[in-house]
Image (cartoon, rainbow, N blue to C red; front, side, top):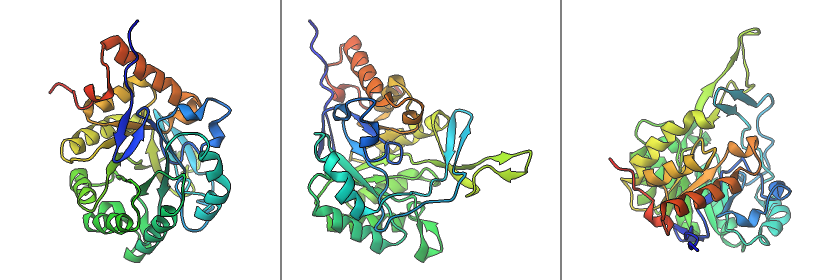
Amino acid sequence: MTNKPDLSVNIGGMDLKNPVMTASGTFGYGREFADFFDVSRLGAVVVKGLSLQPSKGNRPPRIVETPCGMLNAIGLENVGIDAFVSDKLPYLRNISVPVVANIYGQSMDAYEALAARIEDEPGIDGIEINISCPNVKAGGVAFGIDPSAVHKVVGLVRRKTAKPVMVKLSPNVTDIVAIAKKAEEAGADSLSLINTITGMAIDIQTRKPKLANITGGLSGPAIKPVALRMVWQVAGAVGIPVVGIGGIMGAADAIEFFMAGASAVQVGTANFVNPAACVEILEGIEAFLAQKGISRMGDIIGTVDL
């Protein structure tokens, strides 16, 4: 009988039993999917983005379906770090899966304070920094498009925590490799990419934008080729693990990201289409490796034949 392939990976100091993670904002706080499958089967759970204070997000309409994907302008609605720790974290501590807290702020101080708050909390295994947020003190320019701002915010978080730090990169930049290198230089343990691509949709009957926010983040299969290209570029340029995100709907999509250099993947929009997507993707990865006689995850990562 053929032995099962070893799916375990290490992502910047976090040991995962398999490479399938959830993408922040698409999986709630974990409990929401417990009725659909055993959440403990996942490699890691990345929770909905957390801010210092609760946020109601943007006004509706804030989700629009598009060809091969969706636009969202949720606006990072969340319960805030205090309510997360008191109400959501107790469940997550009991599922035997690494928990990654995605954090965001509109100032450097906010990121620093969130990292310090999380550092003291058992049950949070790592931090993912969302740098796609507007820096209100810099006229609303997103942290993630300014290399010096990326370096500074990652450095501030790094100094406040000993937990593994993952930086989620924005694709809305000219040179994502330059941004990735700045994050690594500042102390990031891993990188996740890509976040959503800015887009919009118009109702031709009313001539109004379909989103109240006018623009939103495009996700789903439409962005996969862009995400794959960026993962390949970044994985070849940095010395820390890369986590691939963008349009992963099935196991074949995930395997493409592994071959491009990703050590793990995050599943996002697929969760809205099929709540069991994560486990189906996991099972598909395992079946593919077994079929090809590949005994461990490391033997497929970065193996695209150029």
